[in-house]
Amino acid sequence: MKTHHYAVIFSSSLIDLDDSKYHGFSKEMLERVAAASGFLGVESYREKDGKGATISYWETLSDIQEWKQNARHLLAQKYGREEAYSSYQVRVCEVQYSYSFSK
Image (cartoon, rainbow, N blue to C red; front, side, top):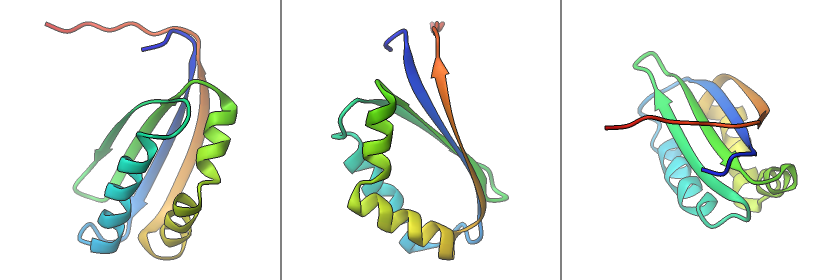
């Protein structure tokens, strides 16, 4: 992964883990974001109690803003606020460096 980049941490609590419309939007957003300008990757986790986090990685802040304004993403955001989430929080972070280990 690129050394200097940005991370968007989206943490949320789902109202209904079996919400099929939410899962449809989630799948579509993962497919669409892969083609977004400056997108570097994503990690996502969800607990059995509905709490979860999605961390997406981006080259620039303007790439993040462009994705935030994507028409289908705006529709998914609206659904999340009105129907799917009991709460959420967004954090935009600057990654100064990163390193990893794997066997």
